[in-house]
Picture (spheres, rainbow, N blue to C red):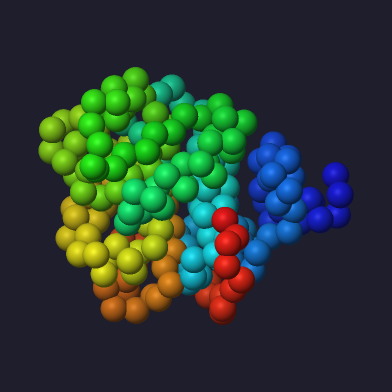
Length: 222
């Protein structure tokens, strides 16, 4: 293993996931990754400020996959073990693409849930059991109302672009979703700003979160 590749390992990322990153030519952690990974991998609630392009996608995907893989469980119909909330279909799809190789290496399954398309394939996948659910708030709440998915076994929740979800009016929906998750879940929140409505979320749904902030970053980093 090269010096650069081992930088992720020194942050606590398991070797199989480090190898996946190396295969994607990702060997040097970004500032937000280096700051947040030790805490999130350890199971702490994390509050991270980083703009789009800061590398926060891997900053939360690596802990999600690592923590689920460390405690293997049989998949249960309609009951995912991890939830990643994103404000838009485009972002949810981007997260899913980054997640696929990590989840495959760990033997985990995932599914993306969003509106504007037929719910039938989504419902079928949930009925078969998935480990990680990447979802937009509106469609997820709708499927929960139909009894198609339950959040009562969620062990780790991620809110990505929390400020954008608040700006788009999703805050009441996000609260309703989080209220249905276990109180002892780990909650990781990433946002470009950490005040206003985002502060309301962290005060209500995070337990003594470790706060990390990074400055302006270069664009186009996953």
